Length: 479
Image (cartoon, rainbow, N blue to C red):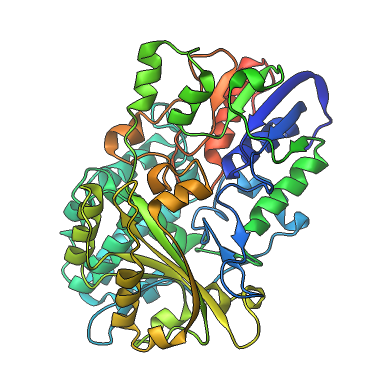
């Protein structure tokens, strides 16, 4: 329920990424007087759509496909459709081309997916059915800080038995190379080596999301999500201040709560020696994920995949086998270049005609690279696509590339090109940076906090809950 503004409590939000906007909306709905500061001329953080190639082509410069967007326990409470957001669900959530013109895919229907997996179909259903029965209550627990009692402890315990395994270990239960490649592509979204503990969790959650609420895109580009959240926030009476970089916490107006959509390292800089040496060091010690090198293309025609399934998919994973994908992720983690990188790709213009002029298409692809890499992976990424879609090179009308360091220049929260807000190692999953900081009334709400990366707004929601509790407001609820 939306309540009127109560001027007795105030909050300042720094940063308008999805988590900053989520925190602002949650507090504004609770009657708090909210002011949001954003350094860029447009709100959204990584939810930004830009004209990067040819006139009329719209490209999602950051986040683009949203497995946890439509499913998010917080987003589900917001009337974003009333503020202009339209979700588009592609025919197929994820396709994975293989050698010899073969492909496998993750379909909405679990039985249809199982049929594509042959002798591994039954195992796939054994993995997925318990998750789908528990969805979305399981997702609410999974998107909460782990160091708290879950709402559904038995379900979380069962999920944890699988999720805390390495993707490599869990995939040994699969008999076929095609099923192992499919799961490796899903787990590799975690941006850590597939041999690392807890790397299976990402793959399981993303697969369950595909079978449940899907992997939608936003009509008109990801900026539409930010615009809808911004419109709702303005309706709630919040003040939005754009083009306002913040160099120090001392530059901000006084408020009962200060919520920062920034990384731990940026918080240390903003605090300007207000933290003790040990407190600052613990924040500086957060390990970063590998970065990404991202390409956007304007195309003369759809990508000519050899197999049919990728032509109907919203997302395509490129890597011929579990082993090839694992090597790519291992090299990025260890600071090594890989000549056959695992590539994540999407061609949104297949499903959203607003993305390109008639007769043209847009697509994007990226791979994981060593954090802070300045290397341009254009040739390697495009060669991987050409491998499974001969003739792709001939469809390229224009391209735009951002290396890992370019990604940080575009958005300062992406340190070294890290799009995860910090590595999703088991230690950092469990001990994710706390929302409450050592400074009274100051909170972190970025993806560096629990539950971590992805566009779901839950980092902002949990930070807002902590701030509301400390301001002695009624408990915030997802209802």
